Image (cartoon, rainbow, N blue to C red):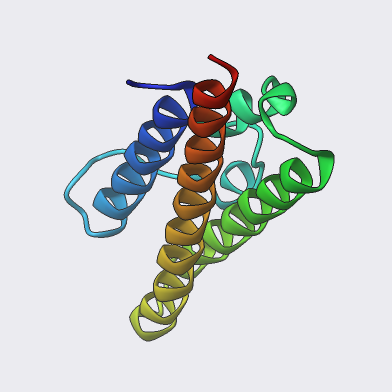
Length: 124
């Protein structure tokens, strides 16, 4: 069963893929470092703003929001490093951290989905 958490994960992963394609010159899309740092501009960030009620407690919501905010801060740093003269070594180092943040965000969302699914089964 697809849930809102699944949709949020796909939205996030699609953004990450577009960002990496732009970094690698595969896509013509550009990312402005000032705009990319705003975690409310992407589809996941917009979903997150409207989805606090899906989280079992405010601390979990704040944790996901914080992870996502840091993710965009690192993405903005990468976008800034890509400006001439680009620093490919620094970009790659930051990209490792960005991927780690992304993976952790997805893991937390999958855990929340599992908890939500288990709660429905118990309540049924």
